[in-house]
Image (tube, rainbow, N blue to C red; front, side, top):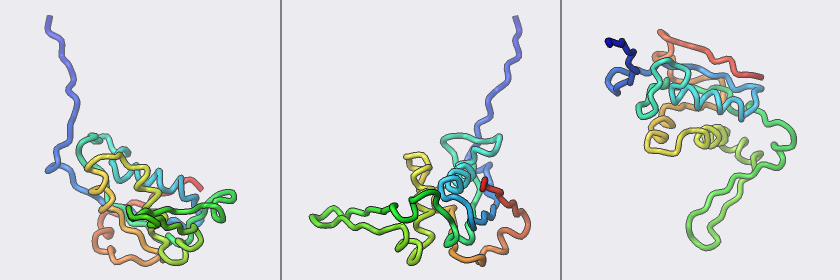
Length: 152
């Protein structure tokens, strides 16, 4: 009996090219925004998604300083970093993080939603975050710009 079977497509690293997508973070909840960004970085929004190859696009996030948190999280959220030494635990509130480095808050949220493997650091390098509406990537975005409309 001759049965014709369809083959599963597996992307190869040299076949995959990354487009550039611009995301406006103004007024959007950080968690929902981070989910959408992580999906684009992994390539899960494309039919050529392969778990062990980076099939995702580059993501530019603008207006990172205007991202919002729901409920009391803006007042209660705390970021921890530990140096490994005694008394090396540092606490930074979300308000301080937003005033000093608003891009770090979004980067941490996206990092937590990426897979915990060697590809995650490479995917995170494709994420460009800017606190204001301007970014220096106009040349890359000019030809193939896609705008992400995240849920509000």
